[in-house]
Image (cartoon, rainbow, N blue to C red; front, top):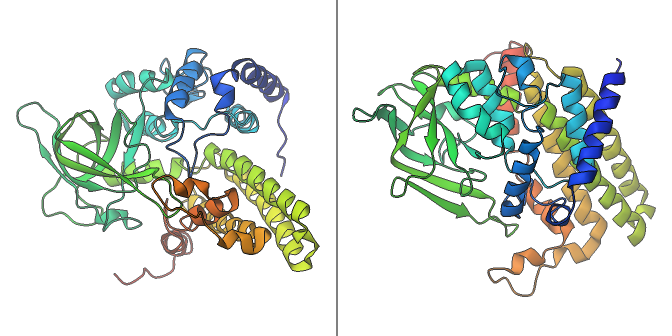
Length: 399
């Protein structure tokens, strides 16, 4: 398999690298590396300003025009050039994208399933870095089992659209988002994947929407509970009752170029763990040394698999395989990080007051956060069911 990039990609890489070097200055340089999984709530103000900086020079929505959304995105870019931009962005340690949900999840979904009017209305603000989105999928009793959602929506007879009532959970960036795409049940009495709709809900509805941060064991609060009490949904994507198809299409998009970006972050984390092992002498342990080498080899394999499946839309198992691979890998890295630190990793801050958990060192925070890697975004059990039933054709699990 040939994983090399062509001359056009090389030129595009030089342009991207030059732009990042010229613009990652001042407050943006100071915010380098902030945000992302485990710290999504950090530095939101400067990251939001950075989002607008990206939008002004056309670095949001690259490649949209090549997928049927002419005039709504910015630069034209092939799939490999999108990978190049993502790689250069990650290597520059630029602030984590606060608009990634709108650009990488909502926008491709609108391009695939939305009307032209919906594309004209919602894509340009995302491309300019002005509109932030969050994702309303999981519920307290419908996390990995997404088809069990109970949030309901009824037609709004007075102003059109729908009125949404229910609760969502584990919602990243809900406090900062301007909009939320919500999977809700619009057909009374329906069950499982029937009767669901994909609705677009503005978050600025005082008295109708309440956001409560969830304090995690790592001390951070990047996830939220969101309560809808008759909140107005302005648009329905893909037609009423077709929400399951749209929602599954979005989840498949979630494992694309972003997976390669994620792996660059993983490589940086692994590098810091290796340096800590060398500096602290833990690397002299042959068992630990073998585990570090195995982590490196598995990360390379994940990259090759991501490149091999990039742009694939016909393999229902590819997204699940990718999630299984990186979830377990990152969790093992967290375990390695505290093993390298030794007994000191078992000691927490002296004062567990409101701000004390931020005194946890990097190894401790990595370990605590990665306990969730095999759960959020689709648990390992659900991914294995998808592979077994949809790819291997094995009997369905009894329900």
